[in-house]
Image (cartoon, rainbow, N blue to C red; front, side, top):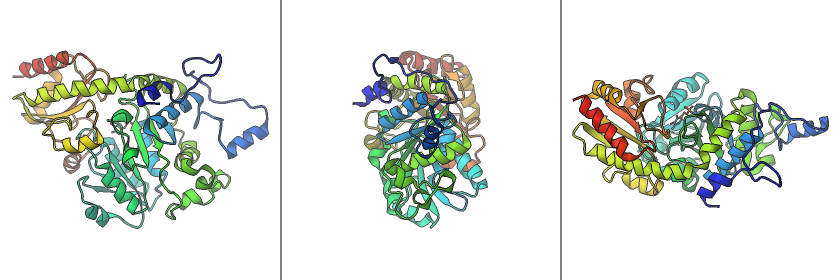
Length: 421
Ligand SMILES: *Cc1c(COP(=O)(O)O)cnc(C)c1O
């Protein structure tokens, strides 16, 4: 199936007389004929037994997203943050370290630099333009994985996934990529060597601002039995002595993540949330194409405005990431634009207040145009140094193009500039 078809059909194939639409199985538990059957499911979880870590509606969505990313299996979480957290905890324990590109989502910076540090896991931040030699210089014997974001929120830099994958693999560790902004419609990181792909499904995948969630996709590519990951090859005493690689092969990572971490943390979405997410996924391919068209037009318009100091959008011919976008985002650079308004922080806030169609929200990648001021909102917990590392200027506005008629979006921008003159 081509990706547009997968958006509609992957993950759920109704049998004779079954509902056409994936049903909402809003039940915490499941009934079985025998105790022995349940006992067997504890050993080999082939059917849902409890909705803290598995549910049939969520399962259908997981299969769909795994198909879209070209992975072997996926696991949904209650937020993108939970997906980032579990993706790392599945390979790092206290005393370990991992490497992350510095240009990533502000919430992830905080999770990695503050909260994981408190758990004894060190994040080594690197400039994402670092050379392979520079990367090699910071790696430690306890470094367990490498992390980056395909299209960074909100800096909109494009990650050289291939470079990071080659570096990680040369050191026997996996690459985890946050692919939230492009979605698998515009980029499939597995094709460039990523081993695990995560998303905040709160963004384009849902697209309608009705559910918050995340997902972790196991690409099934990483050789966990290379000697560096005993947790994957030795018996798990917390799970009846299961050996993940031996029992689950290519899906070892995601099954370990579900059986250990989801079992213990329980940050699993409800069936109803998964149902909403699935509605968004059904039109994802169609929507992503139009987001790219609208954002390209808006980015070009902003570029022509005397009120604007600079515009970041990899679809612009003179954007520093334009060449790289040709490799990683050949069908378009998604719907988010970052621009720096002349006049700094104050003018940025006045401009945003003057917009009428675009809404001022703590959100991005919605079907409706929305704006956010990273320096005073999402990234306010970052130090000035971290702001610079994340590619953020105090006058920067994150402009998330919606699917309104683009002429209306541009007219709104014009009236807001005029209003604050
Ligand atoms: C929003 C976002 C997250 C966090 O997702 P939540 O669903 O808000 O927890 C992670 N990564 C990126 C790139 C994001 O845009």
